[in-house]
Image (cartoon, rainbow, N blue to C red; front, top):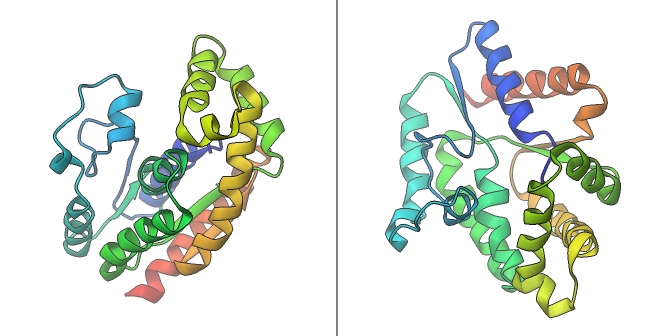
Length: 213
């Protein structure tokens, strides 16, 4: 979810991998050279929306091919779940559609043995309040307005903080069903101890790299 530590963790993981002698690169969702373009990020950045084929799922095939021929580690931060799969949920589409989108991307990436790190808050409500307190206005009001306007919230008559809290609580239940279908690691509240969280993730990634070769 927002503010769970995705960008921080991705950047620190890439730096630690490089420090250990590996070749790695973390792509922040707003990076101009990001290998996967999504409609969600374009909206968040205020960009003019591209033709539908610019967001085609084949981008994931191209990424898989690139990873298969590179010797390094490519970390595509937040694009898989937050910006590609979750929008189908917030748009009010059936859970079966969300599951199918997830499975489709996982299948496209399968040749490169992907490893998904999922950062989970132990308390959704507290996590949302923390993020909004940290980012302040005008970000806070924009985020509440964005979620309040989505189909999922409108159908339930939810707005503001209650909409955000309930949306992420339901999303966590969906994630519980998605994560077991792909190699993944769940890290709870990494902000409580960044060093311990990064060590756990780094170790898991290196082990995964060795076993997938």
